[in-house]
Image (cartoon, rainbow, N blue to C red; front, top):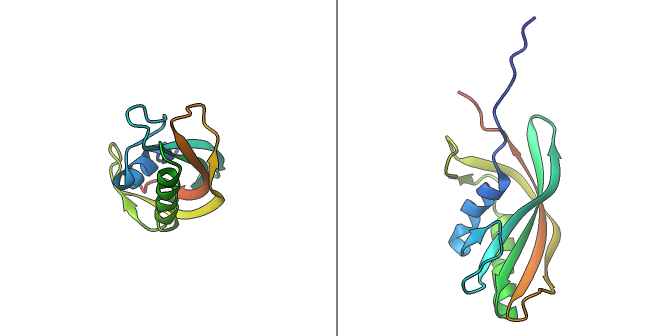
Length: 135
């Protein structure tokens, strides 16, 4: 019996979410440096069963003003609620990526930040997505 290995990789959820959330502002895996406004996306855990990936992500919204940070975090939360089923174009992926589900683990809440001239709101989301189908 010959077993064929599936070498298809799961999409990088950080890249997927940076592309998806880009209409709301600058996205990256690092805090913003210029004006202090941006969306930071980091995978913080999760696993997979070989068929689906179950990433847990931290999304941090940075802004100099507390109201601005809260507004951005609520806009991100609203967009995340609507992510299941959306085809997301990601650079380097052969076809659009589709997230199957998104659950809020921790809603956006203000967290202290080392920079006194900046504010941040942090939320955690649990998602699921499959490997792209090979053709």
